[in-house]
Image 1 (cartoon, helix red, strand yellow):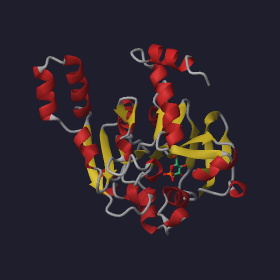
Image 2 (cartoon, helix red, strand yellow):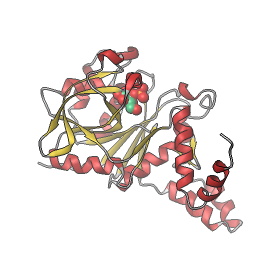
Image 3 (cartoon, rainbow, N blue to C red):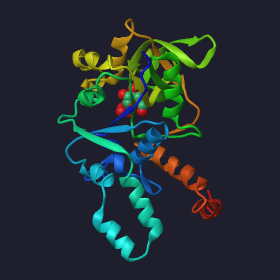
Image 4 (cartoon, rainbow, N blue to C red):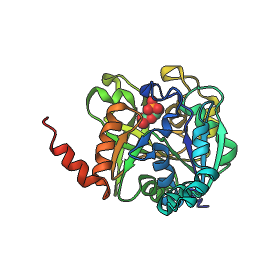
Amino acid sequence: MKQKVRKAVFPAAGLGTRFLPATKAIPKEMLALVDKPIIQYGVEEALAAGIEEIIIVTARGKSAIEDHFDTSFELEASLEKKGKGELLDLVRQVSAMGRLAYVRQSEARGLGHAVLQAKDLVGDEPFAVLLPDDVIDAETPCIHQMVEAYNDVQASILATMVVEGPAISAYGVLDGKPVDGKPKLFEVSGMVEKPKLEEAPSKNAIIGRYILTPAIFAKLETIEPGAGGELQLTDGIKALLGEESVYGFSFDGVRHDAGDKQGMLQAMVDFTLKRDDLGPKFREYLKGLSL
Ligand code: G1P
C-alpha cells in the first residue's frame, strides 16, 4: 500500500558549539539568516512540499523555538495598534504555520537518538527529516523533490551532494551505484559517518534532508555509539541496508551550511542579493568594497 509522507522531524536539540558565543543562550536554529530564523526556512520548505505535521525535537534552552512558532499576543496587539499591517501579517504567518508538535531529547546523545525521540509522534508511516542547519535554496524545495522521488521508489532516500577533498570528513558518506533510468538516484550499498578522507567510500556526502521508512526506529533502538561517541542516524540507516533499499538523491539547488560561520556568511550574502527590498542597495555596497 502506498503511504504519503505527511510528517517531518526537525532535530533541533544540538548544542550549536560551532557558533559560540552567539549560541550560548540562543538556540542555533534561531540564528537569523537575513531576517528569518534558519529553522523557519526548513519548516516553510516542508509545508511547501505538502507535509502536514512538523515535529521538532528540542532540548533544555530551546524554548525560543516554541515561542517563535506560537502566537505572540502582545506583539500582535502592539503592531495592530500602531497600524503596522505588513509586520502584523508577517508575525501572524509564522504562528499559523500548520501543526507543530514538540518532543524533548533530554540528553545530547547524537542525531540518531534525536530522531528516535520522534518515534511515537511519527508512528508507522514514512516521514521526512530536515536538519535546520542545512538551508537549501531551490526552485522546487529540496524535500518536495525528495517526496516525489519517494512516491516513485517507496524507499528511504537521503539527499546527497559531491564534496571535494578533506571537507568530506564532516559528513556521512555514501557508497553505491547509479540507478538505470533514474539519473538523480544512487542505490546505496554502504555508508560511513565522518570518515577520514582516505577512508571515504566516495565523494557523495549526505546532506540534511531524508525521507525514512518507519523501520528506522527499530534500528535506532539497537545501534551502538559511533563517530564522536554519538548514536548516529547514519549508522541506523546503514542497519536498514540488506532489509530495504536506500537511495541517495542528487537534489537541484544550492545548499548552505548555516550552522557554520563561513557558511552562514555566504548564505547571508546570497539571500540578501536575491531580495527585491535589500538586494540592489546591498549589491552597490559590495561593489564599493575595495577587496
Ligand atoms: C549530520 C549527519 C551527517 C550529514 C550532515 C549534513 O552531521 O550526521 O551524516 O552528512 O549532518 O549536514 P552534523 O553536521 O550534525 O555533524
